[in-house]
Length: 283
Image (cartoon, rainbow, N blue to C red; front, side, top):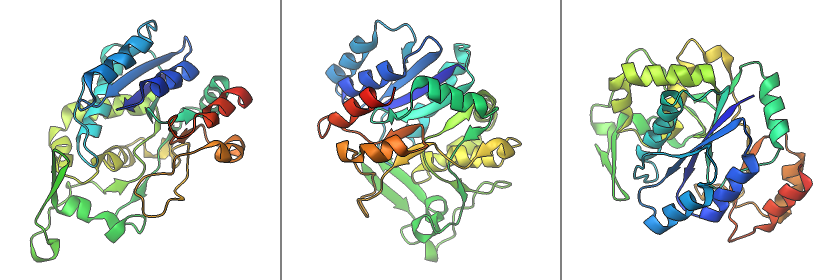
């Protein structure tokens, strides 16, 4: 069972190196995207800390503003690199540098082996009560993010012609992070190369990384092979924060009992002990 990990990082070099070390196997490859806004010395520390590993590849860097298209570009870059390098793999897993596995490598491989080619992606059709206003304002207005500024056109979508969604497609949303079979990754790669208008449309969608891969795959012939689960343990206990809670040692028992494969998010500057517990007890 060969796994290609695409990791999106922008800070905490030691935590990224620890994540890669925990997941590292001869049957794994790592494709790391570091936000172009990240300081060069931080980026270099990430490179230097993994340069002894021949299975770690650093990707072309994009500026990744929250809610902008940069996150999509980074993921597409990872997919392209996997395909163009002709790296053999059965699954690709999209992670952040603040994720961490809560199962052993063998448990992860066995879970995927027993999945018989199923993919794992959180999704729901839009409009949907999961998102404010049903989420349709994300596509019915033009959204542009420049230097962390968010511009919306028109300002009031109730008094203007709404932006039409792509003809022939039902919009879907969900979590940005996934675990996809090689078949799904190959499909996305072909789709992106042959549907430039589709990709360009999402350049002006709000938080497109929470929609684009769901919309591609759930509208595809592979939809039946996708399990509605991102395999992540996430705690949204910080209400209205827009970001999951930072997990600490007090969360360890929940992590140990979880059926999920990965968890987010962790911050070694807040609590490194929880990662120590995972390494010591989940093995």
